[in-house]
Length: 68
Image (cartoon, rainbow, N blue to C red; front, top):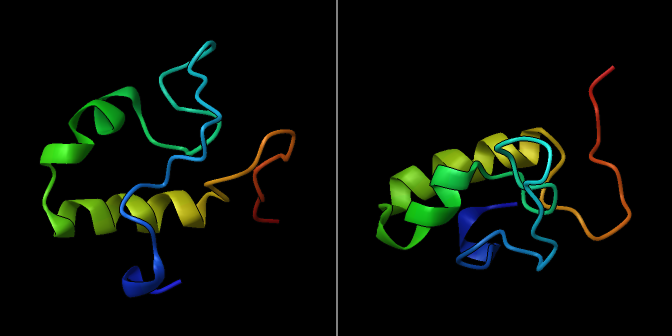
C-alpha cells in the first residue's frame, strides 16, 4: 500500500500491549504510539513499512501474517 493511500495512523482501535511492548492491533511499539504525532513523514513511513511487512495492522481476532 503506497503511503498516499494510507490513513495517517495505523491504529485499528485494538490497543493491547499486555504481554510485550508491541501493540497487538497496529504492531507499533509503545514508544512509536506515544511519539506518532511528533514523528516526521519519513519516520512514519519506516514504521508503516515494518508493520506491514510483519502483517500489521490487523483487525480484532486476526493473527498477523507470518513469513514461511
